Each structure stands twice: as structure tokens, then as C-alpha cells.
Image (cartoon, rainbow, N blue to C red; front, side, top):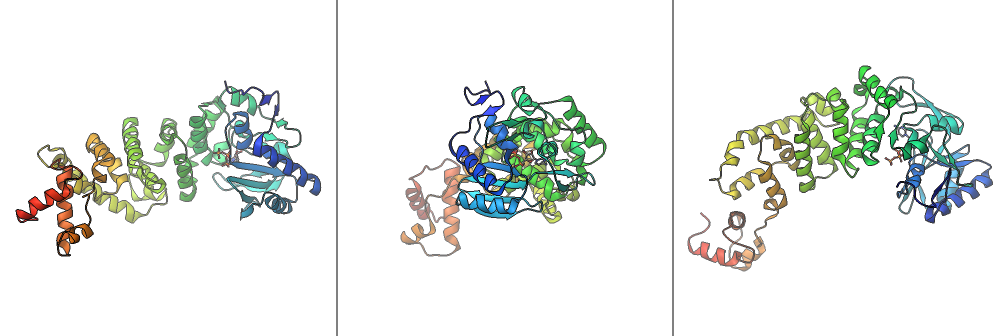
Length: 410
Ligand code: CTP
């Protein structure tokens, strides 16, 4: 089913649409400069899978800067970044290109950034994370360069490292494994599992800098199903190696479901993960979060815990509970689903937190009320009446008039 009729034939891909145009431009510039250029990595994998790809990596044999400048000009794009490794990032419309010199990399120590040296395509592909990414495509012939069986692995849905020390060299690849395995439903090969065991055994995960670790989590949250990737990391004992709390799968599921309903942004998602996993300020810092933040969450979590049974009491009006809960950060509420009522939290995110008084301070002044803090109190009372089901939308003014007659607000 992965094989798209007519697109993938033997080891050749038929380029279509914009990619075809990019290939033509690559061909022209490479013959002008006398160099060879290839599409590499994710774009080749995605082409074979017939998936859209807007992040396109290109490697060339020499003259990277000249090439990048010409390529950017031809696409009416611009060079937006030059990386440490001499790679040029070009933005052209919806596409981002990374133009790099063909190279091989070597790691002087585990978890460090690699040293690089120019090298042939075979080595450029060998330095990569998984066989499914260790593919190149010649823009002239449309031929796939597959030294390591990446095409077969794509079709048999296998995630295979190029060598067993891959995760020792670069432990961020385990997080990439989590993304690819869940995104493409890939099964880890024996070598890949062994590579994880080795990285765990040699404690390389804790050598990653907070910035790199945080970045990997952020990339997980860009995936369609981040929860699956997080559960992959749990299953393979990665989370336990880095953090002391070890929430069960159900708690993750509940917290992530709440987070989705609450519409947490990327930042808050990282903080949710930290709240679920980190048992100390030091562990919090592993995701670039401050000790102060940890302490503040701890204090707030304590206030929530103290009110847990009060929140469950059906005699307490909904409005009081909502006014109490909405003072807390959403990510903390999601992470507190272990001791708070999940259904009530869901209703808060879906509905209660969004209930508005339906009138503004301006409206009240127009109705003849004097400005001052009293207006805020009145609006709060109208909102409470709505939350407690005493009035519906559109009934605010009648309610207000009735209450004013009774000397409202108290
Ligand atoms: N790569 C690697 N090891 C890493 C990071 C990247 O080997 N730690 C290689 C992979 O070959 C990858 C390429 O560099 O294909 C580009 O990296 P990136 O843009 O992060 O990955 P994509 O393959 O484009 O994957 P995604 O679909 O997640 O963007």
C-alpha cells in the first residue's frame, strides 16, 4: 500500500511539481559550478512514501557558499542562516532548504556535537541516524542512492540504526527514533534495540545539554501524535533514566488528553512534561526550566492538593470551584489529574473557563452604574450565575436589574 503506482519504480523516483523544478535548478547550478548535488535524508524518504515535505536537505561536493547563493537567487528565496557546520538555510516560499557540503562526521566524545570533514556520499549517508534517512536522490536521473537498505526498510517498516554505537555518539537520535517509529509506524530492529541498551548502559543520555534535550521534546510536540512518542520513550526506559517520577501510561493519557482540550501551546507542553516527570529542581533544569519555576509549581500544586476534597464536594457551587481553579496555570491543572477530578477539569477547559459575563464594564456604565471596583464584582456575580446555571446567555440584564433591586452586589 505504501507503493504509489507510477511514482516509485525500481530505484527511481519520478519527480513532480515543485520538486521537479527544484531538481532542474539544482542540475543547472551544479553543471555551472562543476559540482554534484543530491537531495538527501527526509525528503527522499517522504518522496518514496508519497508524503509532502517542505524541509529539503541537499548535499553538494564543493563550493557550498556559491551554490547556496545561486540557489537562493534562482528560487527568489533568501539565505536565513549559516550553521556551525557550514550549512546554509534557505527560505523560499513554504520551503526550507539546507544546503550542506557532503561530509563525514566523527564524535570525539559521547553526546558531543560531531567534528566534520569533507567526504564522499557513501560516508555522508553513513553518518546519519537511520537507514530510512540514509538515502540520496540524484536530481539529474531521479535515481535513488541506497547503500544501506533504506528503501527496503521503508517498505518493511523497520527502524534500523546504521551502527550499534549510533545512540552513544548522539543520544538525541533516540528521541528521533520515538518520532519516526510513531509517525511511520516502524518497528525497531534488533540492532536499534541493542543501540538503546548501550546508550542506557553507558549513561550517555545525561550528557545531553538541557537545550538539546528540550529541543527534542519540542520536536516531539510538533508531531501529530506526541503522546505515542512519549510512551515510546517510557517503554524504552528513556524517561526513567532522565527523571525520577515514573507516571503510568494512564496518567500520561489523561494529562495529554486534557492538554489537547485545553489547547496548550508548545511552551506549556514542555512544562507539562516536566511536571509529570521531574521530581527535583535539578531534573526540571534538564529541560531548561528554572528552579524558581519548579518551586512556584510546587507551591501551587500544594494549594491544589489541599483543596482536592473541597473540589469534589457537590455542595460547593461550580462557580466557586471555577474561580479557584482558573487561577492556576493550565499545564499544572493537567498534570494534577492524578488527584483532581478529570471530568470536572475537562468541563472547565471545554466550557466553564470560557463562560463570560456577557456584559462589559462599559455596558454597566451605559446602564447608569458608577465606575470603580464594584463593576468587577458585578460582572463576577453575573458570571457566577451563569456558571451555576441560574441564568443563560441573553438573560444578563434582567438578572442584573433584579439583583440591583435587592441591593446587589453584597
Ligand atoms: N540527522 C542525523 N542525526 C541527527 C540529526 C539529523 O543523522 N541527530 C540526519 C538525518 O539523516 C536526517 C537529516 O540529518 O534525515 C536531516 O535532519 P532533520 O531535518 O532533523 O530530519 P528530517 O529527516 O528532515 O526529519 P523530519 O521529518 O523529522 O524533519
